[in-house]
Structure formats: C-alpha cells, structure tokens
Image (cartoon, rainbow, N blue to C red; front, side, top):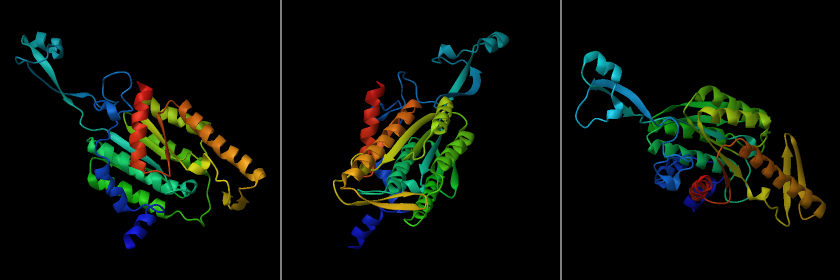
Length: 316
C-alpha cells in the first residue's frame, strides 16, 4: 500500500530518486547523427551535431599511414621534411536543460501533472546527454526565481540539476498565485541566451504558456548558434473537454468554477483551449526549432522515444 501511495505521489510531485532512476530507462536514446534511428539533429548531412568536431592537437613529423590531407605545407617547406597536423575529436559539449516549473505547469487531468511530466522529460534529456559524454547543466524556471546549474561532466552535477528541479517542483501548490507567465518564461530564455554562447545543445521543456513574439525571437537567436529542441508539455483536456463535470479556471488570483456539460460553457472553452494549443505550436514551428508535443496522460519515456522517431522521419 505504501509503494502504491509513493507511486501516486510521483505523479503529483517529482522526487529525486524518481529522476535518478530514469538513467537506466533512457538507454538506447540519442540526439546524435551517429545513431540515425534516434537522431533529430542530424539534418541532411553526415556530420555530427554542432560542437562535435576536431580540435588541433599538435604538429609532428609525418609517419607512414598519416592522412596526406593533414600535411602542413608551410612547416614542411620550412624544415625540408614533411610535417602533419594531428587532431583529436572533441569529446563533449555543453548541454543545457531548460525546465519549466511555473504555476501554469501545476495542472493535470490524467496520470500526472505537467510539472511532473516536464521534470521527467528534463531528467531523460539530461541522461541522454550525460551518456553521450557531454557536460550537463541547465536552468529551472519557477515563478519566484530561476536557478542556473553550470554544465559539468559529472554525475553529481546531473543530480544537482535534478535537485533544483525537485525543489522548484515542490514549491508549487494549488493555493499559490500564478505570476507573470510570459515574463518569467522569456526571462529564462534570455538568461539561457546570455549563458549558452555557441555550440550548446539546448532542450527547452515547457507548456509555453504566455509564449509571444518575443519568445519566438529568443528561440531563433538561440538556434542561430546552438542546437535547440522544444518539448511542449500539454494536458489532454486542452485537446478535448469531458462531456460532464466541473472545471476550475484560474487567472492570477481570480478563480471560476464552470459546469462544462453546459453547451454555452463547453463549446467556447474547448475552442479557446484547443485554439491556444494551435497558436503555441504554430509559434514554435515558426522558430524552425524541432518540436515535440508530449502529453501528461502517457509515460514520458515512451512518448519521447516515439517523438524522436517521428521527427527523424519528418527531417529525412
């Protein structure tokens, strides 16, 4: 009975053991071109994603078998002997996980809340990057503050990121008042823009409530010098309202309970919710950032695996 209760609790609030345990379930997933069945960033060429290249190591005497394309002609002419440049492959790159834990995420009609689904997706993305040998860090966006965890190639740093997500997640409550959704989301993306620089992999996990033209602008700026993936978390209620029952709609401090089996309530509310979903999806697609839509009603890893495969097919 206790284990069942703990499992139910994990659908309402995320826990550190829950996120750490996803490491073993994320095996086999990758964002990289070398694994085309699970790659969404490979594009139409065969190179690895941005930031995974070759860096100059040393200049040395030519040895039989060396690649002639690496001959350094200037040094060879100067010393009268062939010299080649040797390179080493860059082993890691920074990965930033941007996890939304604002009050707009504290909602769910099936299985889990959006905030918990986002926490799980953030953990899976972090483990994928960590297993690929990358440095992992991120930003956790809450209504009151934004936490930054600098990327490091360290299991302890992954755990620190998860701990920050859990802290922000557990600060959410039904009695809390939702703040400026758009302002906080854009502030988080602006901080990401300032911190990321170039050649990062950035996973933005959010319901994108309050997304605007400014949000679109920053996503485009991030994408100009980094690889960016957007994971939009939604609740099935936004797609189709139930035929009966009551629903509480909030806007800041205002709360209204609506009887949704009334035609004058269900039709306009359903059109508003589904229309808002389409608007946000259109805005994200306009940014040219690969978009995955993930629901609260299904296992996060199962959905992510399916979405990775879907985007590969679209991009071929």
